[in-house]
Length: 415
Ligand SMILES: [Zn+2]
Image (cartoon, rainbow, N blue to C red; front, side):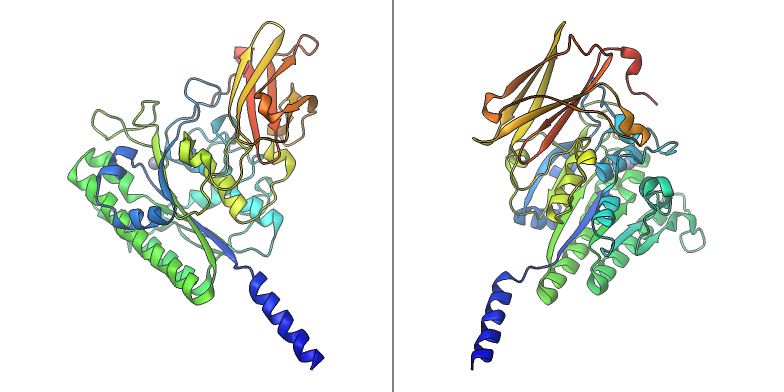
């Protein structure tokens, strides 16, 4: 009797505390400005946003500052992957000439935290796996995808390159169908689905019915992914997070081009089913670098402290202590201000004058001061640490913020 009771108790506790496995899929649909996604008929995106939310999310870094980032495809993808802007990840163009793997991408963070986790990629473009994530490269952490379906752009037999670029739509269809079926059968812990056709139509036709039709086709593809997720939730009780975003907007004149810093080129967006969206998401402005820390938080990935001190994004869900850091440099001091979202806790202010991190080693941070969050400002006396370059990190109970101060303009990041 006693034994049966014990089993019963264990069973009851097991049911109450059984946690659902958490899984993430993120999608980059290439080159769709926010005004376009907002005006078209996108029932799947709307259904997903109804569970979580939709927000504009800027791309292109912080305009006019050291983190300003070209509104170019691979540059944007890598900001999504690493949660950093180009001054750190160093992918300045689609040639992906010299990515800086010191700033770990979300796949590497997951594998480092738990090598048993399964990762997958579905993409027309091979470089996403081999160069951006850097599969099998020692510098990029030697990680291996457990499943990949990509490089279809190179298959000119099955996807003959036609004049109207319709082959790219067929590739995206294959990519999405494979992603949906693989999610149903294998449910990888973290998947990246990359879709290219929208950008091709944008380049070819600009703001046009062809481009709009491509966006609506993408929405239909999201419906298939969403159904695969519903299937897993229902049949396996898993907890799924989906995030859909874009890598850049398009120029206002014709809609054909991108790369610059106009409002429309910078106008990205995020659709997600995430519950628990926080004040950062609700009040904004949010950006595409917020996706990586949001995924990390959902999957309970512990980001190593040295990485965390470099991440530019802020989680879109859960608790946040501080937002909106502002820096003012005077002759002998740096003033830092922020918005506190919590009543209690301290803000620790860290200062370094080196950037060894980008070379793969570490910086010697000094704890300059620690003040109550609610004070919403701190001051650093730099008269005794003269330098042309400072890295400042604000450490708080729920999140980190960081800023660079570049006094020596020759140190401004550039390609
Ligand atoms: Zn693009």
